[in-house]
Length: 210
Image 1 (tube, helix red, strand yellow):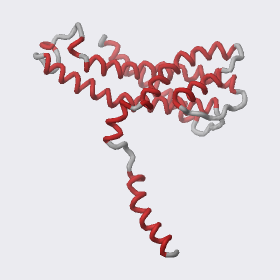
Image 2 (cartoon, helix red, strand yellow):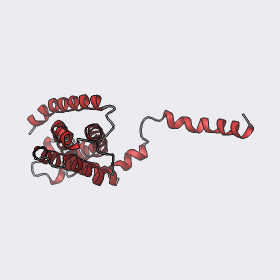
Image 3 (spheres, rainbow, N blue to C red):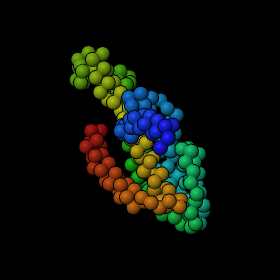
Image 4 (cartoon, rainbow, N blue to C red):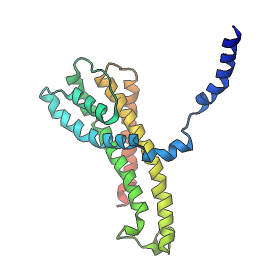
């Protein structure tokens, strides 16, 4: 090994190591995430995936280009593009049916997260609020601070990562059913089932609060 190659090898090691060790995003990334355009593109995709997927179910029975429609949604909203496999029409119908429960759960969960942000940050605007009976009361300022920080800010920085997880799972299913990359399709499908079941169980106590 000559001197130049050796120096490059030595210098590259310490610099590359932190990148391999870093498994979690930095605090700067976390703070920026709710305000990035990519975050809101994911939210838009999660909202649109449900009606588009439901529309594709009867369209598949009529022989429509459901695979291309679902891939077009991912490309236009998320910028994700992959090659459509043969028989994408049939598989597009299967994908629309299989992913419908996940799409429903994703849309509801993401809506709920941003709803929690809105009602807690806007606590003084709620008609039913009574600071004397609320956490942080009896003053309005104390109740507002507790709700805004405990619920609003927490979900503000949590919601983008929930949306990112849902879109990653939905895209994995789309690549497996509609694209040529079938690797990881079975684990992704099992994960989707587990997510739907867990979110369904967690929704029971939340529904009882309303």
